[in-house]
Length: 432
Image (cartoon, rainbow, N blue to C red):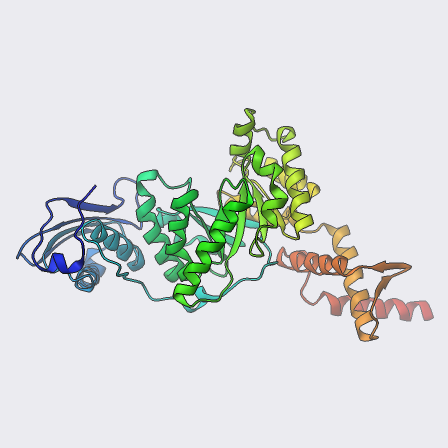
């Protein structure tokens, strides 16, 4: 552990640390990242050494950014080594800030500019068929992830980050929430467990995270703690946007308490199940057939539906077997799940294709929506299809199926116009 000064003022009075702070990553295979080494000196000014594969094009701007950040934190004397493999500005800034904060104590934050679209909020019932996990300390995997057209991008600070790297990952995830182009995907973060997770919230809630995944959730008290912490943060920053929760059920106790967890807060929008940890808790082996997890999955679906939230299935770990993934999705959909996690972009297309309604479901949904439109046009308070009355939840589900089918390319946006023309042609034919 490096020492810390009590405040920036102590440093400005000439305090010197003999330790070196290191942040970031370097080495074979590391891309779009950098490693920063910083040591504070006395009366030597700011000495910056840059080793970068993009030095010819961006060397000056990297040095200028470094000078700007050190000036921001009031540091005038330091030796800085930057070993860069093409890191974007928000990544460089995160690495530099974390290195500095290992050497001095300060509440200052050097924040990148907010992309306008990254302040967009999301709705409680938006589609969450797919969500792609991205390690929160690996910039190369996150910078273009939005182009894969997933419903959600998860910046993971929990299992995907080594314990020694979790603190610095917070700075990268914070900056990504502000400066990374998510291409319309819901901005999600999986936090850590317990007290560490509550600290994670301080880094993400002020920066318009849409949804928080809560790992290894076993009871409602965990949700209440997060609720209280987020309320405190939002009050401090005068924020009013919704932050949604997706608790992940990963133990036998969590399964038994699923309904309690789902109803613990109005901010819970979905329950997910994590089958790797769940089967480990049972002492069984996870299989593609899923017989060992059937009880847990059906319990989670029933608890979710009863609570009015979305049931989300576990990730499928074999990223090469698309046929097995397809069968798993069909089985998952048959149990009542509406989405699943992804650990590789190639899985996204399969999820959207097979969680989407099939042709029979689409035809039924079309009839219900048209019946609803007809009843609305006539000013009727009830919707009927033939001799059957249709409840509002059924209408809402049909509309959701239509939206999902359109998004999956299984139905044209102007389907109503086509359908009305077909019905008109049929009516003319009957008259003849």
